[in-house]
Length: 234
Image 1 (tube, rainbow, N blue to C red):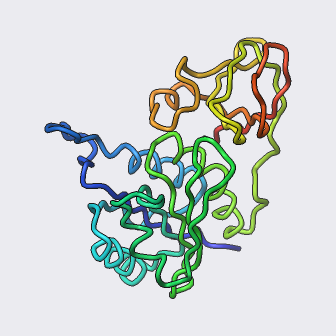
Image 2: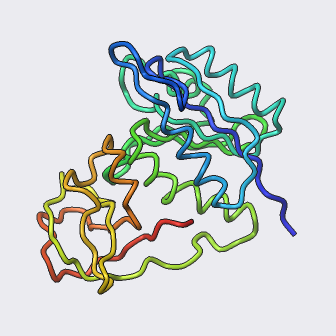
């Protein structure tokens, strides 16, 4: 028997406002990633031991990581935002110098910047991008398989199913694309919204039933094409 992994969630950004509170003021946005990650972590069978938020301050972020590992005995720490190459990327500034956490760009859209490694305590660390669709895709591709492995389960509950495209689209670039899609009554797929897979389009997640996986270098997805679909776990 394997116990449920203990997971701590940390969102970053001076612009974030607590869920349920009105985002007043220029540049302020709701912390939707905290709600999203809490839901998907629970659906993966893990125990959420902490959900916290810090601004764009590397020392404060590092202190929060150390706190959740020590006080909450976290087995896994998931953060959002601050993993790219911008001037206000606290996660990278806090953890990259230690050499234990790797920061990489991945051939996928959305979700290109990623961070992963083991903290000094042995807890796994996942640094996800900050935009909501990137967070959702990154969790399904990288984090959920790890949480399942910690429970002694196969990496995925079931392999991606193949589905016929009902309505085509043009990928945003040449990277492997994870397009939020929904199924019609005949089991065919179409984009969940007209905005495609842009990483900031959180509305696409509300109606998405899965992510269609489009191979790198695909210039156009046409009606009648067959694509693997990573279904959203519930």
